[in-house]
Length: 288
Ligand code: FAD
Image (cartoon, rainbow, N blue to C red; front, top):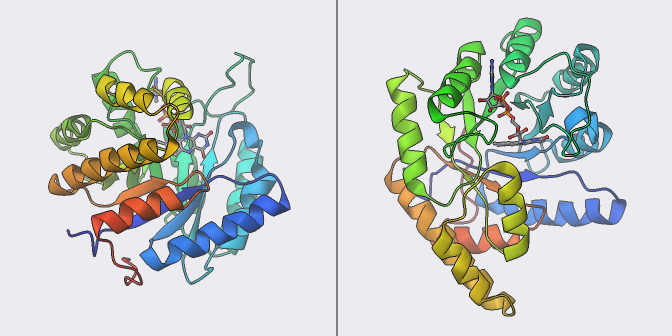
């Protein structure tokens, strides 16, 4: 697969106010020419962004002919509320869902939930909706932070595939060996669904360190130290960050990655810089 034909998807989070929603639509427009398969919209655990997520999904769906894909997490949600949302999406012609467990509250507060794991959400959607939705799940080449070990985490990943997941998107990582090792171990387990690397552009040292600590992504020491060199030089930090991610993408393509999912964080430019430097043409025909 070359960069010209590589399937891409882009992830947004739902903004809080109208100005930011208008800005999001501008970012959407900037990304459309790069021919993504879809734009996905995150969902706050416990339904904390339920209305905002639905609003953005509906506003983006089929805008410029490109589908929107809602994320849906099950922690803190009930079967009834999930079903209401899925009915709405089905009626709107949404055909894919990113099905997740969701992050438990960081303050340790107890949340009521009818499902403990994403595999149960996948099974529930398959049971209630058959093949209406393509179900995409999360994958963790560097191992999910709550997992005791890599082999148990892989067994748990396989539960989601066996329950009916059709594709996966990974947590972001900067070590391509972790992805290669994960893919090899998946193949040994007979897992054949496409596993799209999640790509996080690097634009800010502190934010990256904070995010990574929370989600268990490792920032290689040399990258973190180089980023610190540019603490007071945002332009050089961005140039270095782009270079790191471009090299990562090139290595992943050489490994046969089936496509990329970019964490846009509602700012298109860092991703556009990476795609332009990788030579992605604009106005590509959308991959199915
Ligand atoms: P699961 O697959 O359920 O795994 C969670 C943990 O439980 C893992 O450690 C796993 O090994 C373990 N486990 C699974 N099944 C079992 C079992 N049967 N017995 C014992 N242990 C088990 N979060 C949001 O809140 N909103 C979003 O929109 C969102 N989008 C995301 C998009 C992507 C592409 C990714 C990779 C993550 C996203 N997240 C989002 C974060 C995600 O919710 C967290 O990483 C969460 O901690 C785990 O979700 P999961 O679906 O991978 O959980």
